[in-house]
Length: 44
Image (cartoon, rainbow, N blue to C red):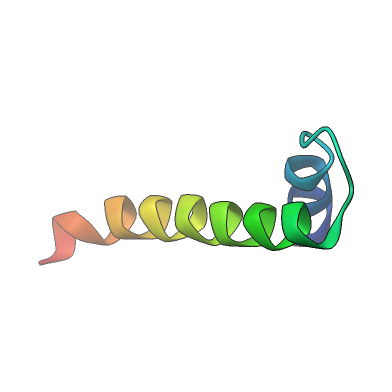
């Protein structure tokens, strides 16, 4: 499931160059981290 979402997110970028892939990975990580933070907020 995670791989699927990750691939889908990465395929959104126009060019599949290394630099774009790195940007994609960082963007995806930030997105996931933001979601995780939002989920954990009520518990704090």
